[in-house]
Length: 90
Image 1 (cartoon, one colour):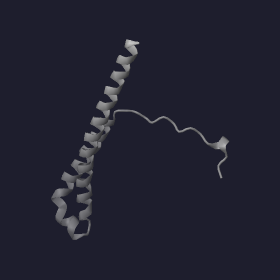
Image 2: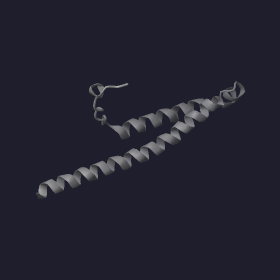
Image 3: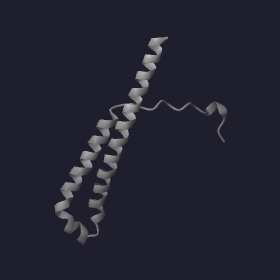
Image 4: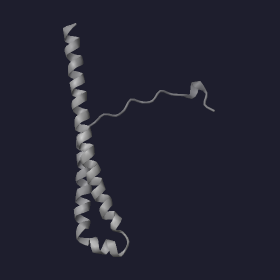
């Protein structure tokens, strides 16, 4: 199906302000949840209560994501510091 010459190497992953991006997304989900909460009765009457719960799930997953990317960021910084220390010693 694919010829060997047609295969290309995958590009390097993009690195950026991951913690800020996840935090911003979590805040947006929380604002959407709070904005829909006063209208929960209307949403429930029209069969759209899942919209409110989707926003709350977004907040919960966002909090989990913030925890994860902060741990990942710290591990990457630790590894870079160890490599820098090792290269300075040689």
